Image (cartoon, rainbow, N blue to C red; front, side, top):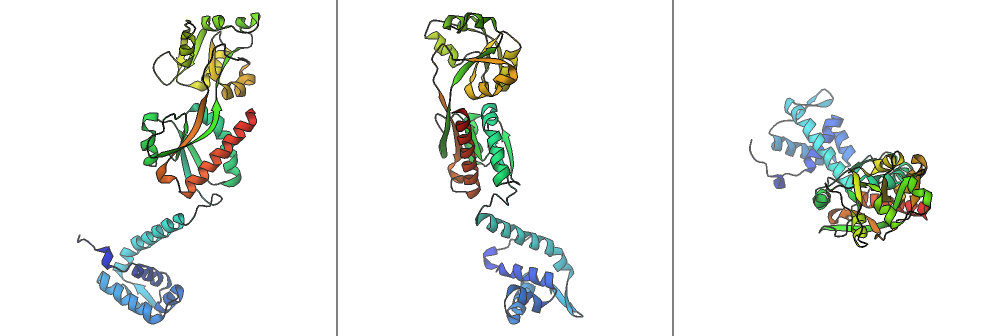
Length: 310
């Protein structure tokens, strides 16, 4: 197959081909494109030279396509449709009409807290938009955003990757949870020594048994026993509900599930630093209207979360 130099081809000829194909008439094709019949006849002549074929032959009162025209028509029409779609997408984003699927990188916590209000916003503003959340490795989040595999990422990003932009959404902190009939509650408040002496459950993505709680306890020369470890944070309230274990959870999860799991929430008897949940996106999509709408929707969802917990 010989190489075609597209810079030497007038692509408007393909639009003329499409018009004649649909109208089966040079006169009607000219009317459709709002040009004179001589100009359309000239376009047909140039098309015949380009494709080395008559393309359309008058039979009776119509211009009927040749075998070659019938062969190339599907690809020509599809190419024009793709060009129109690309131009249309670049001219604006209407969430009320879009059927786009947005992919959000999110762990269990941010999905649990932000997805319900975000879905509510989508149902009101963008009823035909779809959302999917996927887990991600923080070491690779910059590449995932840059390659378009995810549209935004939600989580804790103290050092955002290069070529990304980051927006803080809200602050979070740890609280302690035990089942409501836990023996440690009989003496009232759970002291630091009592807290350290209990068996703990821990959620971590790392394959170890240490976290910020251990660092805080070490400052007081204390050590805890972690007897259950899981990467799945959302199962901890249910584990705690049916055991004598204690766990430290983000406050928004603890308060949402306290009634369901019959949990007692208490302030930790040690000092831990709060952290910021943020939204991350690629600098490449910073001005993309669709991505901008999604970011505004997430920000609005985060505001609802803040209002709920204030």
